[in-house]
Length: 138
Image 1: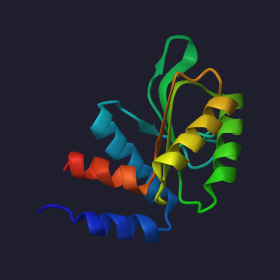
Image 2: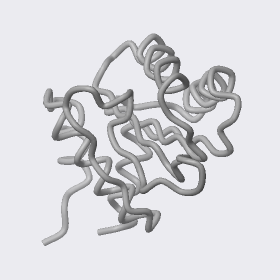
Image 3: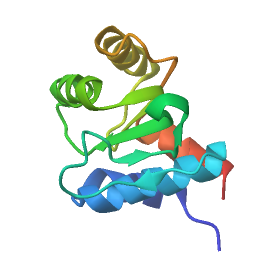
């Protein structure tokens, strides 16, 4: 039975479990991009909600951050500032359960690139983009 996209939107908007949202993003992104992401510990996660296996020099191919916060701007700054002190990443994936316009995604990407200048790739996924990934990968 196919998942109704409207149900996914309702769940993303109303769910208040950060752990469940992180797991959703990890599983969805791993499936969509073919990159194995591993969940991190609930405490002392070094600013990472998920990470790939390390590649050369302790650098990670991908680090995923996820948030349910409505005020995403401050959360992004806080998360990425901490991440710059703890981890080397080739790609940063930032997921939000809130709907994000393409303009907002681009704005967040710019902030991440300013704060974490050594990152090669940044992907920002809000509810709209996550729902599209679900549709593509069901």
